Amino acid sequence: MKKIFEIFRPNQRFSRGSWSLELPTTVSFVDEVDGVFTFEPDAGFGALQLSSYIKDQTVTDDDLVEFLEGMLGQDQNLIEVMQGEFTGFIVETNEDKSWFRYWFLKCSSTMVLATYNCDFGARGREDRLVDGVLSTLTYSQQ
Image (cartoon, rainbow, N blue to C red; front, side, top):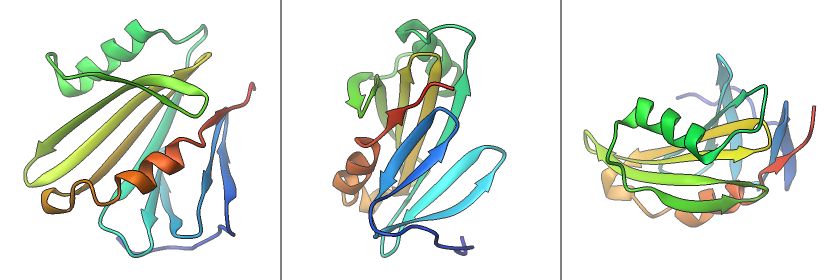
């Protein structure tokens, strides 16, 4: 994927609607297509994508599980996580020689789906960086 533009200074916040996160200088915003925002480490192996959904009422754990089962199927190994001000679940899986990490996160009426993927052989190499970016996830009421 060709980088379209780089707009972030050191530790600049990237804000969209009811969520925002902080990006280090080593991660660049690449593209936005249909509400899915893609970020890539400058000298990295994979890509991080985020999208969000707003509900009329508070998003629950049951809502997250229903959404993830609709996307990934049942019988997933769910790990509870807290990323910044958001809580939810992470699912890790390999598909067609690629490694995927999916975060299904909620705060108030906002659900954020974050997906990281890379070649299976590079799994784990950027976990600290990606977890660090997601740990800065904050909620702002609209």
